[in-house]
Length: 278
Figure 1 (cartoon, rainbow, N blue to C red):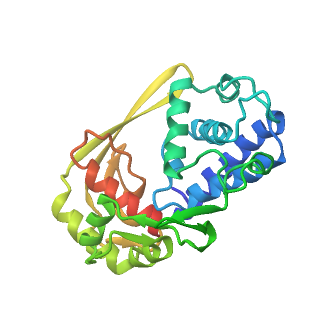
Figure 2 (tube, one colour):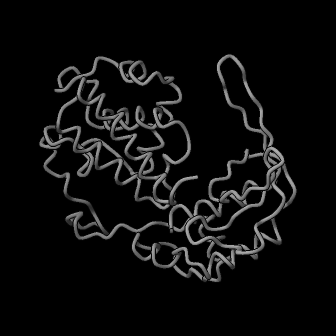
């Protein structure tokens, strides 16, 4: 169990820095180091931190691929130059389809484009004199005066209703959302009461672990939500379970369910809220 909730995010972020820095040291330059760091930090600040789920090496490869795509990394007239995206796949030992799909997810997530004012490397951005400008109602204005707003997602609307909020606007700034949906003990108790009624117990999860030549299966039986303290000051809502005939408590925020599981949507909404607004 992680020492605290933030620690897992920081650990994975540090792994991303190490993996991308290794590739950059071989194939890229300091300009790329700057935008790689910016992108990882921005991903870590998102309400739904994307790299908390999935293989971290695929995320590292996708970050390089996404930034390389918008900065003409595969164009031989640009320096630095990588002859093919396969150099990235081979370095991180990832598949072309998975990496390119994750790269597109990142580019769509942050609206990355050629001559991007935030994630374009300096030498490439010098080619675009308009990268600091945008249009509002037909007028050209500096991007610096615009406060970025986020459209409320469906899961955030569901969470807001559960914790007793009424979100009247369609979009909020990052700061507004952080304050509106902040995780508190009182709201965790509300969520506990909601899940107590809606979640289906008992259920079993089977985990598999490779030990030497053997694939070991282990069963964990989940009995109910923890009933005594209900909410832990660090780990939030806890789930009572039986593992190897021993009663344990696992944070609901760390529970991994298949999308086909009847409790998946309930748990996924809670985890999105807990991880991103804690």
